[in-house]
Image (cartoon, rainbow, N blue to C red; front, side, top):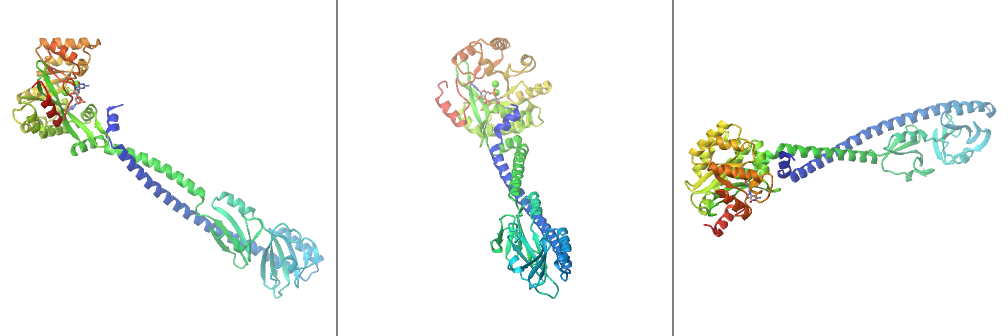
Length: 521
Ligand code: C2E
Ligand code: CA
Ligand code: CA
């Protein structure tokens, strides 16, 4: 895992971002769903209105054609049935929707396009049909001839005569509607209402108008005829709702992911680090360094700690490296200086005079124009002459030798000692011995760990130790955990020891306790 990724994973309040993203996506979900449903509802409403208009137009055209034909047929009245039947038959065949046409005189049907001459009271054919009206209609379960197929009887009286006229029997064919409703999933059904009877696409047979459902109904009266249609359709079908919810869910998920990554990107580790300084999430711990000869405490190394409110302790290796690569190490070190100054008073009462106060300084910081000002500020604020400041500088990243050399001598003029940190882990360790003047060489924990173990790096430690003895360099060994390591290092002339064998890094209060109980005073 890359450094940035490592820190991004540990530092950012991802749970908070996730929660926020979820809330945003929930809002988006509701807004999207409501707006989409509103639009679909509106669109369906317009569709329904158009459909109603078309239906009225279609039905009116049909009824007008029918009455025109019936008027024509009524002109056959004076003829005997034998002469009228051919024309009657012709009209019945070529008028769509018509099953039969019957001539009626004085309430008696006497000539049918289907059966020719007859004599039957209209009352027996269509009980309830009102021949006194100029136009009347009736809906019936069947006719005498075709009893099992619902039919509509249409009555058109001859002008001026009340119970003489033409009677048409219409077939009710709902197939076009059913075909149409297959394409439109908002359609729930259709009802044809004649008088107080109705026939629907969702009931078998004829029902009373009173039994028609009222919900989702659109009533379409056909002007001029005792006929109306009821269109049943929902402005929002279950399909519409399901689809909208599904798309809404997808949109919300995408929003959630997007907003989460935008938050990660925008807030980022950098802001989090700066925010952590402002809100005092950092503190300093101090790890004692002892003289190898008498084990007396020679001083302490200051180490930064970050306690993130959500993520807990974040390893310094991670955030220091991050700050170094992101150009944040300078503000972070300035913050460390400020924390040291805050602790200085207490430290002075805990540690004896002339104690070393070792501070880790990033080589990048030394190239900053404000570095000298920062150092002078620290020196000015620390209790004068109580502490010997030691700057631990790693060889890694020391690119510009000239600047380093100049800075080292300036620091030493200010009374700051220099320790080369993590010695031996870089590539140019030995060159440094030759080129730079410094006060201590810190042998990395990695080498100390090899003592007593026959590893590849064991001879490296021996070489370093032989060299430092010959060059009469002051050495500090870090990461001393066992007496075996301590004895070995002492035997090989290492001047100072630091490690868990003596103490872990401690905050000021714990350091005070440690010093009180420490036997080698
Ligand atoms: P370092 O400068 O080499 O610091 C020594 C590290 O070894 C510290 O880890 C310390 O806690 C750990 N250590 C000391 N004795 C023992 C031991 O006996 N056993 C084991 N296992 N570990 C021991 P820490 O505090 O986690 O710091 C890690 C690194 O982070 C430091 O390595 C240093 O490079 C950097 N660092 C820490 N604080 C600061 C700071 O204030 N400024 C800068 N620039 N770097 C810092
Ligand atoms: Ca160090
Ligand atoms: Ca080290």
